[in-house]
Image 1 (tube, helix red, strand yellow):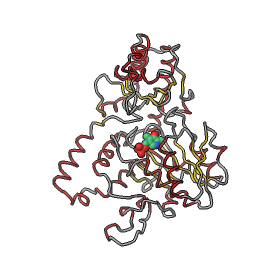
Image 2 (image 1 turned 30 degrees about the vertical axis):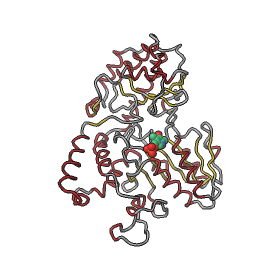
Image 3 (image 1 turned 90 degrees about the vertical axis):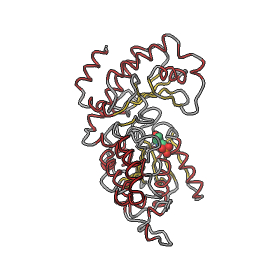
Image 4 (image 1 turned 90 degrees about the horizontal axis):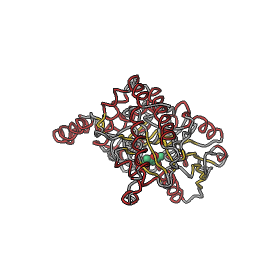
Length: 411
Ligand SMILES: *Cc1c(COP(=O)(O)O)cnc(C)c1O
């Protein structure tokens, strides 16, 4: 049985240990919710000050040229590209993940006009499903959303399918899809493949090019630590960029936005995915947040993530066994992302008690306690200490206080 000293020894040997100091983490807090909102990187406030108090204040409108503000969607996209197996000019930053899903799903359906089916999972993140429903309603052209329960996605892909739209790591269970396998199957059936990387980018090696994926989207405020509401990103494989159109034909995706032509002409390449004016402050924050990933060995990040999640599973079972937790996450580290989720009938109040005890995870309806493990700033001893708090709130029954049962608007 592993103990705290063993975990402290792992911290000593951890090649990523020094990255902890790159983040502002409140004293005493064990932050297991970087999959919902990454913490503040220490270099971000200075960048915000630079953009706001110097570029905006002093250089005003000239900043669009002087400080390359207009290139941020591309330049920040090029920094995300290596994290997701994309090349330069294949990733664009902007809009939200939801909006980017709409743009790419619409483009995909237009590329496969003779096919009417989008395949996804009923357990996919709701916005991914809702946007498909909204798009289908708007097209009014007899499209169908085929939702698969569970993991039998492959069985649902046939010759009617235009697009397979999946999230690589399930936000509830942490189940990791076999990206290459599913993508090949989609292509064999003549369908296009879209991946949502919101819960995978930044904690593991993602290889869109290796899998041959067509499209991808992702959040940058989760494991990429880009800050609340940070602009999202999208990926379009280079060979599709000039064949496809996107429905939000705003002026920033025009071939010559400052010619102010009467009619829309799409820009070549990834630029046609732009819509309106980029959010400069948000993109600059994300740009600074990405510094920590420069030259980072993502294989080491993945290895640490698997070790952290594995120890957490073992320790909860050893120290909190008999308290009614059922593991919702795959036990095989190769089949999970960087989170551990447990079903528990009192999941909500237990999580509130943990948060009061400075162990911050989150709750996902109907009964899931979700703990995200970000290897950049978590220590192995944090795993031990988090389980200590969990053990305490269970043993002393403090989780059952009435105030912990009252649901907040945001869980
Ligand atoms: C977090 C998340 C989103 C969020 O989309 P927003 O438009 O940023 O609100 C979308 N999809 C998945 C899979 C997510 O995990």
